[in-house]
Length: 195
Image (cartoon, rainbow, N blue to C red; front, side, top):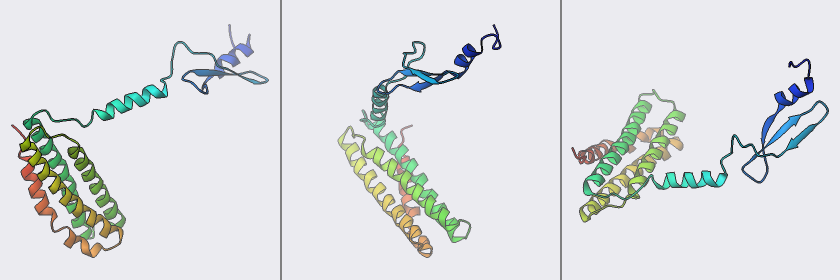
């Protein structure tokens, strides 16, 4: 059978499209005919759509697994070391951006955006470690030390971002002075990583 023998049948097959069916997880089938368009809402047994409720539950479970308790002091030290490494990366990025801006190698809009991105990355890291439950009293003391250091880093990067956004590029070098000391303190925390 060819399209020339039965043109209407071929038109129906070629123009069938899947469209969402309102109010549910199934799909309807739109069929174009030569004179009108007819929509039927039959279930498609071969392919089923995922219900929005299932997606929400899956997403919730995946996100809740991202942050959890730390079961041992060694595990907590590993998390602190990873946090310090990521935070130091954000601090070093800010240092490089300020240095490039001083040398005239970074445009002002780029400088402001890069400093904002470094601050956002640091905020994410700080939020993550703040949500981890320390397992022991020694870990609680370490948590206090880490959160205090991360607060200092966040303050320094926020000051840089604000100055860049306000166009005070001449102050960036002065505001970046604490960054090498903060990076060195973060490096010491990285060394807590168990071997």
